Length: 327
Image (tube, rainbow, N blue to C red):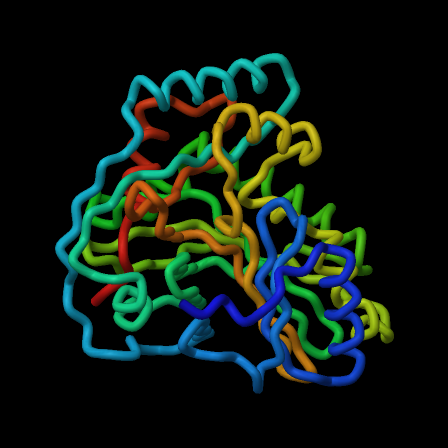
């Protein structure tokens, strides 16, 4: 069998390549691991679609939607409770204010990763042959004409619940979690941009899945980059990693808590995928992510833990996020 045709680059090489190609106006795609240790940078005109595919902001599925057979075997509640307790203890000690705790769930489906990619409807989709599929609803950063935008997404509720949007907006736990992540990402953007401001706060996104609709709460933060930003696009992106919405605050200490609590390597899950078109840059956090492993298909999901979190509710949210956006 032929091998994946692109080299896995360490962070330093990947950063330099992004800087050079963006300054030259050369279009490229990028995939970066959660831990920012490295990834892939591929010229847009050299993507081999037998191995790798991207679809950003497609309005419909690439082929007719058929609802897959789908069963989920999540981590047991007892095991999740242990990991949740570890995180909650650190939060009580003041070591973290918000920790994103994720776990893999085993999925049995009659769809291949490629079929899921082709039928899913999402703002950002990526497929890597024999490795993973991602159909993410969450933008990481957009850079347009020197302005940088990020759109933190925190807070999820089943849209079929009566008064779902109002419940989400009024939940003290969700308000605290969302405020924390907005503050973190505002600070992150301030490292690379000036005039950083929250331009939209706590608006509702509607996400359609094969099991129904979910509501998610988002905000928009904007800043201005220096005039030479294209010569340092890689530095800008890497300075913001890992993404605050899938790590927590304060970031360095929380990353260590996540590593201890989760007990597995996230790899490209919750890393980023991005596209530079020769002028502007668009990217997504790689959530809603399913991976081919030696033990079968695993769908990784989770949520933010704060001092207001209740274990049973967080466990149910983890399961609720194991879906395919097929409609």
